[in-house]
Every structure is written in structure tokens, then in C-alpha cells.
Amino acid sequence: MRAVERRPYNYAKKLRINGALNLGDDMRFLWKRRLLHLFFPTRCPVCGSLIGAMERFCAECTAKLSVYSGSFNIEGAESFTAAFDYDENVKPAIILLKNGTDGNAAYALGEALAERLKAEGIDKKTDVVIPAPMHKRDIRRRGFNQSVLIAREVGRVLGLPVDTKSVVKSRHTHSQKELSRVSRALNLKSAFTASADIKGKNVLLIDDICTTGSTLREITSALKKAGAAKVYCACCCKTRSRKYESETN
Image (cartoon, rainbow, N blue to C red; front, side, top):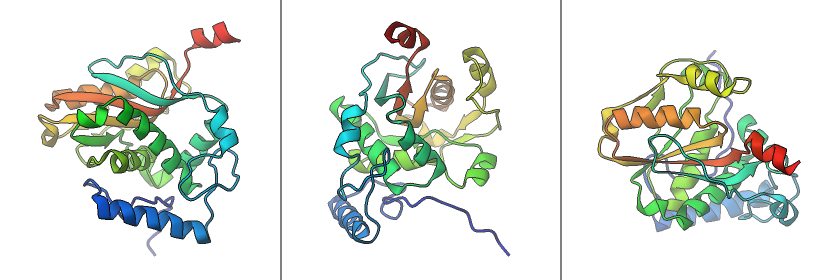
């Protein structure tokens, strides 16, 4: 008997995958969220309290979130954008996103990132949204790619198509979590491959969290080698540098 994959519910999944939403699609999305809210009340992905159908976080948690205001460069990319600093206040939402146990986490984080990108005018500079890919072995284990969920929300808000096919992680690697900066870079070396379909396009590359930038840097390199005109990088959260932590603690 064939095993059924476990996948988190994603509000935008049936509305758009490889094309931008038109006004009718957007209205259907809004009505779908409101309808779902009647049967499955929307909750804050940080504290779990009940919130409105179209809200991202509750007021109390929103006040605690630290908006990213740093400066970070990804080699080969035109810019880097993040919505929040990665800290204890936003961490519960990231955990829910990665575990696939909260349908509102992708919506909350993705919309916040899209709002930031729109404010910076990135939506006017890019042709397509590409999520950081996972190796097929990791997708089988987890059942989904959280960066795809974020990318779909970003694409919906910005009116950009989402491409999940043109970049693949062709080599399985060790988890980046416990590796040093140098080890992270070596671990991901030549792990990603981009197809010629991306040639001449301006790409918005999306990931959930950025620590050292190794993942974004390697994917950017693969995209440029495949002929992408420009690459703009963005993440929901950026970890603070150790220098920053030592100066503020």
C-alpha cells in the first residue's frame, strides 16, 4: 500500500504554483482564508492565541518581533532582504513552519517578507521567485520544503510566478546547523544545479533563515552560471552575528 506524504496545509497551494495570482484568484484566496477561519480558527504562530482570519501575529507578539535592520551581502547577488532578526521571539513560528504543524506560519512570515520586499521595490526588479531547494532525500523525510511555502506567499503578494523546477539540490549534504562558517561553505560547494530555463531572468531567491549566507551564495552562483541576469536574495529571518550579541549582552 502506497504511503501518503504528510504535508502541512498551505492556503495558497491550490491558487498558484507557477503563475501570478490575478484579482479573481486573490479574492478567492481571501474568502478561502475567512471560510477556513470559521472552522479552524487562525492562531498566532508564535504564542498560539486566536487572531483574526487575515492577521499574521497577535498584537502582543507583533510588538516583540525585531524587524531586521542590518546590512548583509551575498556574493554575486544584487541585494539581501530579511523581515526579522532571528531570536527567541520569532523562533516558535520558524519551528512550526519547519515542522509543518501550523498553517498560519507560512502566511505570517511570507507576507511580512513580501511587505518588506515591496517596500524596497524588489517586486519591480524581478521576474520570478525561486525557493531554496532541498535534496529529494530530505523532502521524502520531511514531506515538504518550507522555503516553497514561503515563496508561494511572497509570489502571491508580489504578483510574481514561483518556479520550483529550475533549481535543484543535486548533491545531498550534511546538516548546516552545527557546522562552522568555513565548514558550511565547503559542505554546500557545488551542491546546487540550475537549468538553462532561467537564462536572462531576474530572480528573487527565497529561504527561511540566513545564518552565514552559504546556502544563498551557492544557489546564486548556480543561477548566474545558468545565465540568470540578476539575483536578489531574501529570507524571513537573519541570525545576528556573534559580534552583535557580544556587544548587546
